[in-house]
Length: 76
Length: 191
Ligand code: SF4
Ligand code: SF4
Ligand code: SF4
Image (cartoon, rainbow over all chains, first blue to last red; front, side, top):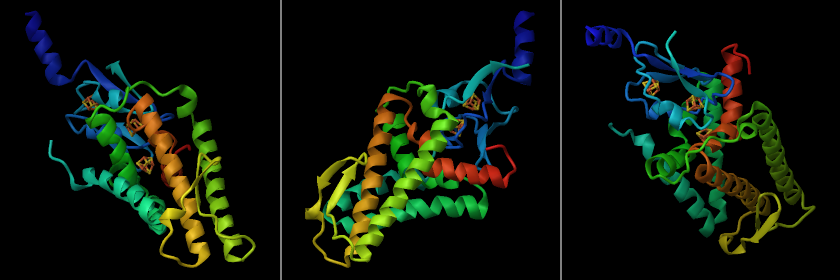
């Protein structure tokens, strides 16, 4: 029973996701090279944005980001 | 994952600094890394130069991220703050203007050509051995001055790559900061 509920929520979306702090993002693009889902992109040379539907909250981008502008948070 | 051709552009960093050891006049080619990002930002409103085609960004990524030459620690808050980034941009532009000024006074004949490379704006290193093909003095003066800026910033970048995240330099790189400002202004975002 429990596992079935778990499966459903995973299918819908991951528990965690990446959140970018625009104030610190330098729009360098370092994060885009490590995302296994291609979920993070630099928007108009200003800051990076995460595609909520693709992000699995793995944290690779956060680890790579030189400005430490990405936090992995529990989805609201 | 498939590698793109531009992920090998770090080779240009090595070729560029290497050439400066043999003939300082090659330093002029560094202007490419000055104008290309501005063309991307002003003309197209993006940072594709930083995101893809910058040899230096790829160099730090190759050494720091792919070969482990980085402690991977967080940068100190002051170093990644907007205050520092904007101040460093202004400082760097000032230093660039001083390179232009020195070029001009040599051109005007007020001063003679100074065959040195200055690191961190204080340490003078004799570099006359890389000036063998003689051209007009001001052309050589600009090369020495510009190479000094390029080498100083490269060393700073390598130090912060080793100490913090691989591409730490990209957070306070004057070109990166300036092009991000231009892009944000174009997109009506707060700078
Ligand atoms: S947390 Fe993982 S999946 Fe999400 S954007 Fe970052 S690297 Fe991509
Ligand atoms: S790595 Fe960090 S600073 Fe660079 S674009 Fe991504 S979120 Fe922004
Ligand atoms: S921030 Fe500077 S060093 Fe980094 S990719 Fe952009 S231009 Fe190159």
